[in-house]
Image (cartoon, rainbow, N blue to C red; front, side, top):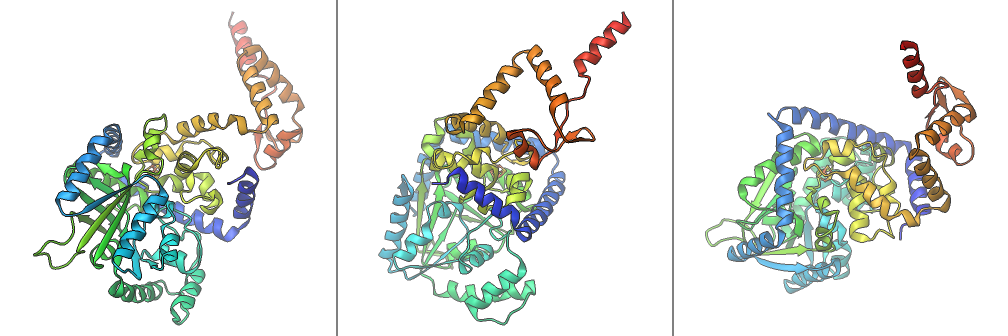
Length: 466
Ligand code: SF4
């Protein structure tokens, strides 16, 4: 369970680590600039975002139909579909597939869903060495660390840390040259690809009408993991469907642009069934594991909209809170604004009550979200549900605020009091309030209400005109 104290401690540690804060700031800033530039190249980005939101919403509203169609098409093309109601079942299914093929070495492409169910631990416990093949995830794995961004897992690491991790794992010469470091990882992973028995990937989009799996990567490791081993296991959340192949370009245009500012991910792999008789390569078996893990319950409630998420990470890059605390402080596989929704909704609000409050509600996340999820609105709704777990003093203060805001007279009175009572005022800002306000103003400036309110000025002006 993540308590408010544990959360505060993680945040304090994260903020104190200047190296991480600087690295995250720099990387997210570049991504936001690249995203803005890349979106400008689209003829009508707003129309495409609107269309993407509508397609996703329509799919969610008709999910049973599209799931049925998808399953039928995957089976028709020779694949095998497994339903996993929860993380335990998904882990068991995948471990059973590995055992049935005597797997000793598996490769894995980057997949947030597999992080969600802690798949690697289960496979390792079952005696299957599982190697991450996305460069960032590979570094995280060999450095015994955790990803801190849903698209860029090592956004918090610098080149020296990456170099040291590679030296430890591969015994290579120490270098800080980015190209050499990449080449070292590439050589190491090539050998793993040659020897592995099983490939595990996530799925960015599942196409219902054809049973096609769309896997997007920038390093080609998704394609290698899905074609090189004899058996391919694709793990996907049930919400990843789109109805038709012709819907895919809408999302492909937005996914890479929102993530990294690229017009398209470097490798966009479409998999329809296992290897056919006349195919030169490909897996002999394809298993698609459809994960529910709380999603169908979410689908029927007021938060269904979060299932539109295509995990592009743009909301993390745009979020001033994420940019200052990084991903680890959230204490969850899914960090940032979308994580502050998904984590409590899928894993329990009591355990993660502090996450919906880890937001300034500035709305930057919603502005960049390619599928137009109303993240701030949903965070507020989730906060309402956590009201009971708030400290008594805070609840009393919110009640007092409500009482004040309901009456113009009371509002004017409080404004008058504040303009005279707030100490330590400079240039119209207070930097130290009394009591609990002191903690708030310790790190924020509070604008001082002017001595003459707008109402008073307005009244005076009206009487002058008369
Ligand atoms: S909520 Fe929107 S912006 Fe954030 S990861 Fe999901 S799709 Fe991207």
